[in-house]
Length: 217
Image 1 (cartoon, one colour):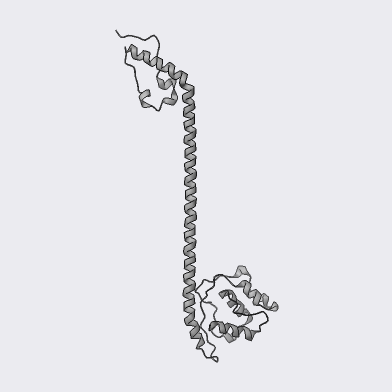
Image 2 (cartoon, one colour):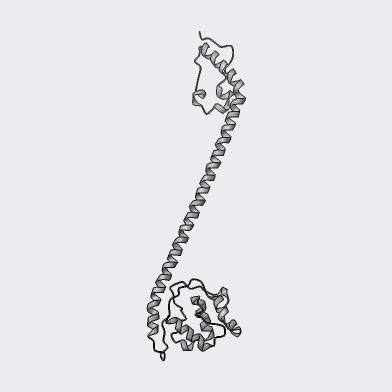
């Protein structure tokens, strides 16, 4: 005949839900008739009951520390990602600068040949080849400084300017410099971002002469 124990021993998982993740405790069963095991289980329940506040505190602390660690890890990942993006941006900017320098050097080398070619043009023919642009940006400010006060209205607003790339030549190029006007000179200053040494007091003939000199230099 099977022995019975005077009290019902509840499963540990019912008494301590926070220990439900420990398979050894959850799956443990007391064989029928094992009075010693039942008594041992009862004592374990009583001991754990007194320790429950401390266990709960430990679990809460572990959860807080774990959460802090997770947040710290996420912050570290975020910082690493930001550092990587910053590094990538620096690399891209460096490549762009190197590319711009290469374009400028190529344009300057090409202009040596083009200037020599323009130097051989007879003055009576006045037929020049455009040099390539070597200075980034536009020369709107230079055009304003070199313009006569009564010709400022010939200079387009900055918003209307399309900045040309280094190494290009003006699409509006006219090989006959003698036909240039104040507007043409201003357009060339803006395109090349170069004032060619022109001063506000220079008349049209002086402006064309300075530009011819630049084409041959």
